[in-house]
Structures are given as C-alpha cells and as structure tokens.
Image (tube, rainbow over all chains, first blue to last red):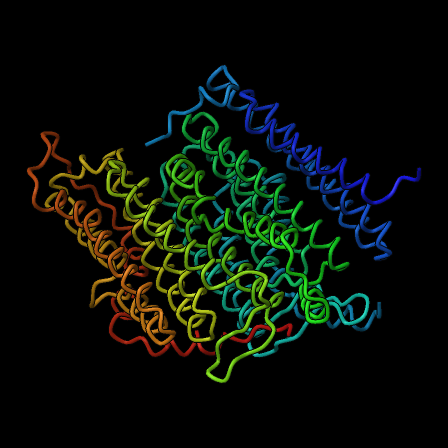
Length: 102
Length: 500
C-alpha cells in the first residue's frame, strides 16, 4: 500500500479536530494555545500534501513556510501575554479570568 | 521575475514603504535616545502625513503589483484600496492625537516607543490587507495586524483589565486565524491556486459547488468575520473593547474594521463574480445563495448588537455593542451585491470614522476627568462639562442616524440601495433596529441633562488642549449631514476594484 493524498488529509483533519477539541475543553491558557498550534500545523500538512500530490508547483510549500514563521511569532506573543496574566492574577485558568463580562 | 517590473512595482507601494520606514525610525530613535520620548508622536504624525501624500498620488493609477507565474499578482493598487488606505491614515492621525491626550497611555511614558512602533505595525498590516489579491497575502497581513493589536490591547501591563482583554483577544484571534488558514488550505487543494483572480477563472471552467468547497469558504469567512466582529464571531468584541486602552479600542472599532470589510468585499467580488446583470447587480457563482447568507448574517449581527447594548451600564461596552450593530448595517450594504450598495458602504465608512472616533474621544476626555466610564456616573455632567457633553450628544445622535447629522446620510444611502434592490423587508428590519438603538443612545443623553447631579460635583478643569481635536471630529459630523456631495463623489470615484 502506498501512502497517498487521502492519508495525509486524514491525518491533518484528525489534527484539526484534536486542536479544536483542546481549545474547547482545556482550561489552562497554555493548553489552549497548544490547540491553536495543532490547527496551524494541520493546515501546513494540507498545503504540503496538496502541493506534492496535486502537481501545483511549490506554492503550497511556500505557504507552509509562511505559516510556520507566523505560528512562531504568534506563540511568542501569546506566551508573553499569558506570562503577564500570571504576574497580575496568579492564574492561567481561562475560566477564572472573567472580570470583563455582561 | 523581471527586475524592471520589480522596480516599477516598488513605485506603487511607496505608502507602505513610508510606513515601514517610519516604524524603523521610531524603533531606532527609541533605542538610541532612551530619555526623550517627546518627539515620538511628531515622527509618527509626519510619517502618516507623507504616506497620505503618496496614497493620494496613487489615486487613479489602478495597477497590479508583484506578479508571479502566468499573470498572477499579489497586490492590486486600485482606487478601492486607496480609499480604505485614506480611511486608515485619517483614523491613525486622529488616534495618535488620542494617545497624546490619554491618561492610560501617559503613565507608561518609558514604553512609548513600543506603542508607536506597534501602531505602525498595525497600519502596515492593514495597508497590505486592503490591497491583498492573494490568499497568502491576506493571511500574512491579517496576522501582522493581529499580532500588533494583541499587544496593544494589553499595553498597560499592570492593569488587570488590559491583560485580560489581550488574553481573550489572542485566544479568539488565534483560533479564528487558524480556522481561516485551514479553510485556505482546502481552497488551495481544490483549485490549485492561492490567487483570487486565478481561482475565479478556475471556477468559471469547473463548477465547484459541493459541500467541501462551501465549508472551506465559510472557514475563511469566519476568519474575516472575526476581524469585522459579525455575529457569531463577535464574542471577543465587548470584552476586548471594554478592557483595552481607549485609543486602541477606538482604533480597532474603525481602522481594523474598515480593513476587514475591504478584504471581505474583495474576497467575495474577485473570487466569485461570474458576471454583471443589465441593471448592474453582481452575479456570483451559485455555491450558496450569497445574498441570503449576507442578509442573515447582517440581520443577526445588528439585532443582537442592539439588543445587548440595551442593558449595558458601561458606556465603553455599550459602544462596543453599538459597533457590532454598525458592522451589521455595513454588511447589509455589501449584501445588495451591486456598485450602488458598495457606494453606500464606502459612504458609511467615511461618516462612521468621524462619529465613532468622536464618541470614543469624548468618552476618553470625560473618563480623564471623572475616572469612570459608567453611564450612571454621567448624571448631571451636562451642567459641569457643558462642551464635552454637548459634543457627546451630537456624536451619539449621529450614531443613531437622526438628521441633520451625518449619520442620517450614511443610513439614507444604505436604505436607498436596499429599496432599489427590492429588499424592502430587510430595509424595514434595519429601520426597526435603528429605532431600537435610539433607546440606549438617548439613555446617555437623559443621564447627562435630565438627571440630578451626583453629590461629588465635578470641577471643570481647563481641557482646552483637547478642544481642537473634538472640533476636528465634530465639524464633519455636521457638515457632511448638510453638504454631502464631496463624500458621495469620493465614494463613487473609489469603486474600481481590479482583478476580474
């Protein structure tokens, strides 16, 4: 059996669903951010797999590179923000951080 | 790629180059002269001024920039994008004055370099966003815009509500941009291209109308919908708007929303336009009933925004819900799917810029005086702060859309477009929403003028420095209400969207 496009799509969809699941269920802000990273990486797998199996040239690989760079930047900023929250409130539980609400 | 083409393309993006160079100048100045921060706003304002000049010079050029492959282009510098660049520049110009006056920003004087650098980062992101002609450029510029605004929303690090706002913003923003890039990857897989115009030509040949393609489009719309805060992607808006420093809230509610709408309009028009009917309505590919989709989104958005605004006690949070409702009205202009509707959207944005920034400016000046944004604390302010209260009333009346203010003209053009498109029921619902919004805006006016003052009587301090800025924002709200030919002409001139 050869590994084809479908296998990659199954893996990426699984990753996407796991990422969404983590975002919805986890209470810890760091784990929510890890869920976001899973979603970004599932998109990367899609781009590279489509680019490789669809004979679309290298544009998919290029997009994946952009996404990796931006994911790193986003992780850095998000972690800095979570660190600041921890300094101010001594917690990173997203359910307890709800002073702003109706 | 041809080096001569590259050099002539550089000519087209002078405004962006000026903004990024100003960013670098501010950053270097901040690193070298660590003691003196007074010149930073001056640098920012002059950068914005030069960028405005180059943007005005770009009007009427209508060219593509940065081509690759066979006739694919990354950016399209057309009048539509130049119009939105002007909106962004004017609001940035005002926001920098805002920041000079804001007490929240003043207390972190040692981090002002960072503040202006990030503002210019946002501006650069929005500039590329409004002229983006490729899914990659859309994603990258949305991220540049978002990353700067996450930090700015939590700029005052010691303030609890600032940090909470930025955490909520980064989580919601990260999720929605992740979903958007996943949708883009599916679109890329099905069409083999990331270029909007090329996808359009592929869709003409092979009709993709299955559920997968629809899902991927909705995923991308979720990412853009987050930026313009339409329901159901609006959950971040009230919290972030309430928590962030007021200049940033005002900036997010005008400039960032304008950029989001520009990219939404371009995404829908360039990617899905298949033809134009005799009476100038756009025919889009029948992937979904586009008009119903947009109408449903906008009606839910304006109704929920107005209903939630009814029971807000914090004026800043109320304005957040009111900005959600306004996003609904503006989306209705796009739902007409014609150049007439698009004109209404552009006119709405010019007027929305002045009235919304004005409302936030007066809110900030009053908060500087009384240290509160609570509507109950505004009781009797009409007598102790007569000028600011009068201006706040004018801006709020304009947000309702009552004549003779400019808000009336904005709504008038929108309703004319709706009626001309025979969307009478939708127009009636929008009108009822306007009546609903009257209640919560007037409640503020009632507290200002008809309630007994609080015991702690507020001494009027000399705030004359801020008066010119209030006048600058207040004059257009009056003048455009009576003499609106210039803005309608500008809007009609700026309809040109390249790419079909």
